[in-house]
Image (tube, rainbow, N blue to C red; front, side, top):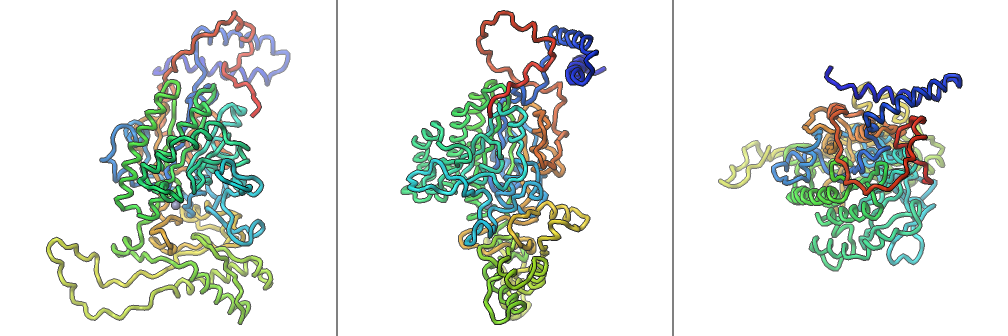
Length: 628
Ligand SMILES: [Zn+2]
């Protein structure tokens, strides 16, 4: 036999306790004798309880999300990495280079909700960053986390209450929520980000707190959903020199919008990681008798990435900077968590990827047009009026649209006596022509098919050809809401991906999917993410921690696997809508999982009081219930 007898003994112990309570009263005497016997053996062999959240193995779980961090970046810039920033995952941890979201709405809010819940939009309900909810607001879409029943806390210079935020739309529990439930509130769970949705959604409904910034000042704030007053350590962080330091590091002065000016630079990552350290200290994470969990969403890469694109030198600088910043953060954890980094698990992933800048993709020959959604809505409105209310100018398509959804003005359709199926069906029918109407006028035929003048030595050649037509907007597929909700779906991976994208939020809508490499026309940004295409769905997935066997693991995995894997290793329930798989290929055999012992705490003097408790034969670390 390869394995020692220890696991057999453990099994016997584990079986004894639950079976005792299920048996008849007559059995109880011999039962308790058996329990005493087992307990006595356990004492002799000093068998520790298996590592789990209940006995603080690990001390702390960190879920690190980099906003808009595509899965290819770590391979592309790997030669730049030093020390144990990204290398913590690439060489000391388990790294999965082929991680793809399995849904079609690759936006920030659904991505973060997916990471926390281990479910997709059809499970957690979050379809986009904002959506139209005419019952709550007639003037603009509501955000995924805004909640008028609460107010913001810590907003500097606020003269009147400002609408707060909460996970009200999150329909599933997160791995953090399950940790709170399993330990009866003993484990602490927090979420932080520059963005409210990215702090709130991955941490969940039972989180002890979530912090994000006031975009103007950069102060960390929260909502009365969590607390009515900033804890002292947050107030101290805000009034310290961190903001000035970040502004200096970003090279900006007289800042009028911290989120834009500092948030788009690598300095924002240091700023957030400094706040994470302040939180870990302020809330004493990793110091309790059960496992704590922190989600950190680093926003800078997204704010910069929209403006500069994935192939820019700014992207490389951000990645290389973050490598150093993570090294600093992990070193800090090593010094400040009892027993060091060996008592911490870290997961690394992203909420979505990003598309190449359309002009760049077009240079390679793709039909990478942008779609002016305002013009598309006008064109549709014109055609719908012709159909249902000739001569009128009813606004049937709501303003402020963001792909992949197109929201309909339910009230106007109902006024015209048109039901949902009819309305969505009509818009869907009119959509291809409306998209085609956005095409630039057909160019004059090229004057000749003579080859272009050859480039001078040193000049770039025109690739692939200067004879190609300019890109034109093109629809790939569209889906009305009702079949999205109930199917039938094609019995293919595409059908599953669509099913995963459904949410009842957003009223009446159509899901609009343009051809690959196309996106909406944007005023300030150069590129974005929203689609079912691989570049938007590909994200990194890395783990570091005692249970993980170091290596590069090829093969499709999904961000939903994080919650499932962590839940399994922590010995807790998977989140309520979890569909993830446990990544067993990267797990060490349990007998090889070793946690460093924290420095012993000086023994407290006790008077041999342990004897009478033995016959309960319960796990030695059953948490005491505290008021959550
Ligand atoms: Zn983004």
